[in-house]
Length: 192
Image (tube, rainbow, N blue to C red):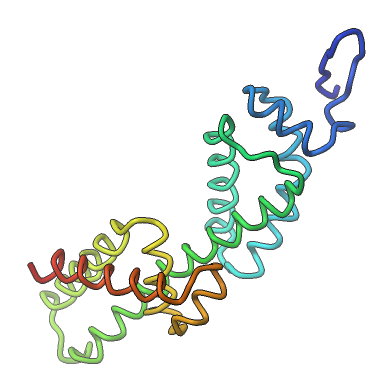
């Protein structure tokens, strides 16, 4: 049986409500309205994420992060006239963040292996490699979210400042400053 909502003397089924109406109800903590949004958008967003993330479990985690964030921020949600656009934009940034983290890890390991080939490494070197990879990832993950995304796009995806600015709707100057600030912070954290 579908959840029902009583408004005045009228009885509405959640599936008949518009996205904007559902957002209003979600903002008041209505979990049935939230469930309807999930029912409408989880599958198409998941398919969108899977086009970019090959691991099913990781794609599901990204999907659940999006909806968890939506629920946690329910009281401050903007009037979403285009809820689908809002959710797909959230998916885009979560996927970028996910890919950036994974590509950065892989890039750091490749660079480390270039300097210290595996055939010349003992177990001690492999432990150090894992520790270095972990330190780098921890340092990058501690950056503010927007700075982290910009830094990863610059260093892992090898995008120019102009391309990053266009992708994130920022000025090129802002991107340059964010990358420079990220490098300063990472230098302090990693070098001391």
